[in-house]
Amino acid sequence: MTTVLTRSIAEAAEFIRSGGIVAFPTETVYGLGADVFNVDAVARIFEAKQRPPDNPLIAHISERGQIELLAAEISIDASALIEAFFPGPLTLVVPKTSRVPLIATAGLETIGVRMPSAKLAREFLKACGTPVAAPSANLSGRPSPTTWQAVLEDLDGRIDCILQGEATDHGLESTVVDCTIMPPVILRLGSLSIEALRSMVPEIGIHRQDAALPPRSPGLRYKHYAPNARVVLVDSPSEIGADTGSAYIGLTEPVGEFAETMVCGSVEDYAHTVFAFFRKCDKAGIDTIYCQMVSESGIGAALMDRLRRAASH
Ligand code: TXA
Ligand code: MG
Image (tube, rainbow, N blue to C red; front, side):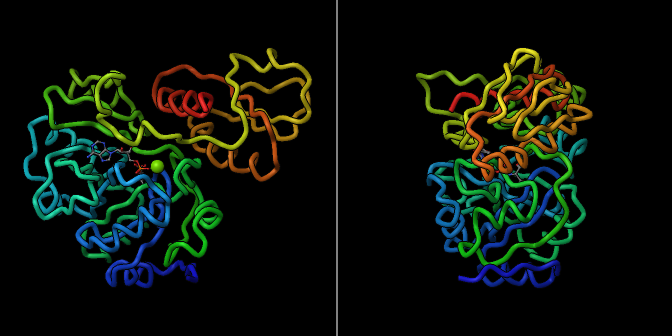
């Protein structure tokens, strides 16, 4: 299969309308989309990404009016979060309608719903005329793609089309909140901060997986966000000895020489660049990436979550 690269929203949306699978940019990361109601197209997403079939997909909408196609019920807390944060980097898990095929939700009776804020994403979703199921557009287990080039690296020849846009704004995935329970709980930290969520629903909790129970957010069980290189977390680059074969990313300028170095101006910058940096290091064959830890407020909490996951593989 040839993967068509295009900047035309109409051309990319036509692939979705005819049952194809298309990568497109959002404000978080690039997604790999299919019509959520088309069982064969959704199956192709799992195949192209080599995604385990028990990992559910997020349905993306272009306007709030589409929520009722997907959600059988919206709690008061869910409504408050929709009011405050749609469109934006937030996914709400809600009971699904019978119309949503079980393949999209990996057999669950719930569905993740998200309305992206990126202009290109909104226009593309509108042109598709249907909610679009989309996981991140990487091969399963690789860092999420923040540029169309990263999508091409993983999925060239495996998908119908890539809608080419700019590098994504946030660089980390959306925050996933389970609204099927009271009070809601955060299943995955992400680009929308805990502080922002709690300003609307103060009692929101953070899910801690009990190893004895089935995972509430199946995706978090899998190797995720990790480069091939070994990731080592450090408080400060002064802890690292001379190591010209490895790489460093952080907020503080290191003293020594590294094969690849990325000094970020802010935690937001760090979050925005980290996955692209991991991919660059993999291409360069780096075996160890030192990552400076950051304080866990704002997007720092999600960044530390991804760094810890990357370091534990
Ligand atoms: O920012 C994002 O969320 C990006 C863009 C493309 O929107 N998408 C994304 O999708 O990161 P994905 O599939 O890579 O991650 C979705 C996460 C997984 O951890 C999955 O298990 C969880 O959301 N999830 C999806 N539906 C769920 C559901 N019904 N119940 C619990 N967890 C769910
Ligand atoms: Mg993903």
